[in-house]
Length: 121
Image 1: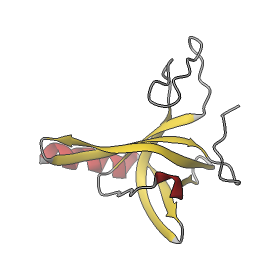
Image 2: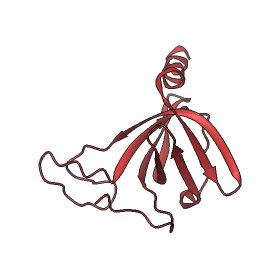
Image 3: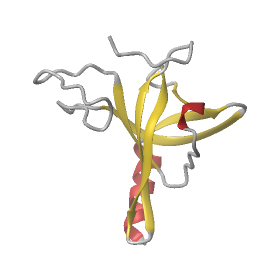
Image 4: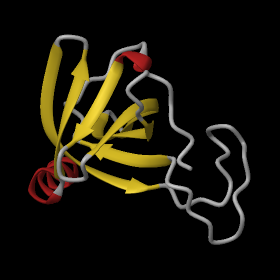
């Protein structure tokens, strides 16, 4: 499907390079990462944010559909050298148009060395 190819081409052309680490396995690809700007984190902890507040604790990642993330997601670390940041994967799913995978989305949390998620403060 032409639309799927266009989306993947845009991600490869304009996305930032990341490394997805799962134990000893490492894979690299291009993705879009941006902070979540929603007032209410309904899909995470249900904590409301004040109007206009951006706490930076969670981000949205859009990746090409060929990136495969198997359960459990807690084993993955996403490393972005461009942003000088590491993330954990909280939730993810593939978005389809009919039977064609268009892209993978994931909610990322801040990564701390001890393995616990940072609260963004």
